[in-house]
Length: 356
Ligand code: GDP
Ligand code: GDP
Image (cartoon, rainbow, N blue to C red; front, top):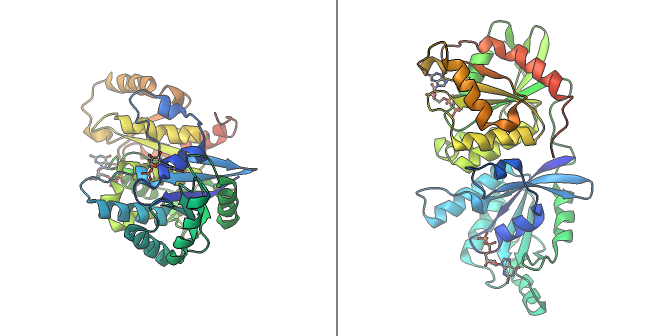
């Protein structure tokens, strides 16, 4: 049972990535094994007893053209938006620094549950340092050593206590789907196009899950939910365009969906980042539809569609079961095929066993 998302925050060098790797273990993913795909993961799933949660290492979210202080600030923002529980990592060797204090203030304001970990507590002398951290006013510090694997059982128990009781899963009895893909592939345009389809009646009640801006609608008297994640999007494109952040957003949408529409930008063609996004849906064991969007921009003859299909099959071998459609969110061309296809894929994917 997936209980939610935990984000690791902290200034550089306190041991965030060491702790991240220790907690997620050495689990390999097909996505990371695909050539040409970036290997430095920043998310993973942690299993503890019979349950699990998603873990994000915000230290791995690089933000271009930001100075050091702004970068930490943005990482903490992302953690606050995306996580149910925040694991704030500090270092016993250096003690409390002014950056720690700044992060602690921000976290306090967020009212999110915080677990304060004092890392690098490798020996008894360093254990004494934990008392220094009460000044952050985030409760009892928990001493750990990422390097030696000390203290994590208690940290995991505490995290499990703080995570929401309810599992993260799709709405019951409704077909839920999301649009995923790189920034600017046309996700919001496609959502709007679907909602303007004939026979689509948008309900006036908003989705009720936390942080969600899900849109319920009916089509031929059947209920559907478009899953979206509000996230930091409301703060503007600067966050949206952070590649790794857009991956995290896709992940949390997929968790709550039965089917993911994986969009490719027909104008730009397939990019490496597309493989990463597609792999997320596949690994989560969800139904996938490959949507080649911006079809209106593609110069085509009678062979073009076939050629592109073959290219997609070669690039996304693990998605061999996923149907491919060519649409234009802008002109609405072929958007009407999508809902019937979503039904089909939803029915079919209930029979497919997740690969991991
Ligand atoms: P990040 O920048 O916060 O992700 O930190 P890293 O995980 O890259 O670790 C920074 C440095 O601290 C590395 O040299 C690690 O080997 C070291 N480190 C991590 N955990 C511990 C620990 O528990 N004890 C000690 N002594 N060093 C650690
Ligand atoms: P998102 O970042 O994935 O949500 O992408 P948007 O929906 O914001 O679209 C990004 C840009 O692509 C916008 O300028 C859209 O008008 C444009 N766009 C989206 N879909 C299409 C399409 O099917 N054809 C064309 N020509 N442009 C599109």
